[in-house]
Image (cartoon, rainbow, N blue to C red):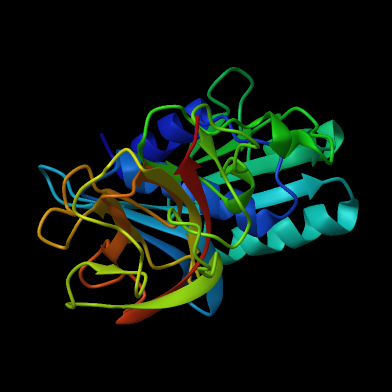
Amino acid sequence: MSAFEEVDKLVREWQPLALPTEFQYRNALIVLLRERLKRAKIEPEYRHKGTTIDIYVRQPGFLGSSEVFVELKRNLLQKSQYDRLVGQIESLEPGKNAIVVVLCGETNPSLVTRFRDKYEITDGPQFRVILSDEPITVVVKTVAAQSPHSSLRLKWPKPLGTYIAASSETIPPFPRSLSGYRSEEGKDFWNKPFPVKGRIRILQNNGWQGIPNFPHTMNGCSSGVFMIRWRSADPNVRLQSSTGYSAAVASQGAKTGVFGYMSATNCEQPMFTFGDSPAQDGSTLVDIYYELKFWQAAP
C-alpha cells in the first residue's frame, strides 16, 4: 500500500478523545502513525516550499517510496478558518502531492461541503478524488464532548507494567487507594522523604538512564510499589521506557512513545533511553517531566 492509502486507512480507524488543542490532536495522531507504520519516516512540522506541513509521512515500498502530507485542523467553524485551510492546501500543490486533511473537534458541515466541492471530493465513505496523479481526501473525526473532570474516568491499570499514552490528558491519574498498601505524600517505600516531582535529562547513546538515587532494593520485593506518570519535553523526541533493577534488564518489555506511565515493585526503578536513533528532529538530548507515587505495604 502507498503512504496515502496507509495513512488514510489509519486516520479513518483513529478514535481520538476530545482534546483541548490542535497540537495535542496532532501529537496523538503521530503516536498512532508511528506505532502502526514502523518503517515509515514520520515528521511533524515538515517544511515544504516555504510552508509547514502538520505531518509528513514517507513510506518505503517494493517499487520505491511514496509520501503523503497530513493537514490537521481543530474546530473548523468559521469562514476565515476555512479560507486559511484552503490557502494551506493550495500551498501543498494538490494534484502533485498526496494530501490527507483531518478535521477534529467541532466542524461546520457547510464548510466541509464547501471544501469537498472545491476539490471535487465525491460523496461516499471514502471522500477522495484523483487530481492528476495524486489523491486528496478529507476525514472528519467526531468525538464526544468531555467534561472538565473526564480524565477521572481513566483508570490506572491493575497489572504492573509499562504503558504508552497518546497525550498528557490520556495518562490516568494515580489511584486514591491500592489494596494492601498505603501511601504518604512525599515519602518513599521506606517512609523516607523523596521528591515525587521532577525532571531528568536523557542523553542519546548513553544507554538506559533512571531517576538519581531512586530507592529500589534487591530483595523484599513485596515491600512496596511505585507508579510514575511522565512525558517528553520535546514532542518530536520519542523515548523508550521500562522498569528494571538495572540498565542490564531494563529493555525487557520496553515501550516507545512521547507520553507514558509505569508501575512496578520496590525491586525495580523507572528507566528511559532514546526511542529513535537518531531522533527525527536531530536532537541528542531531551528532558523528561515526571511525577511519582510510592506505596508502602500495609495490613
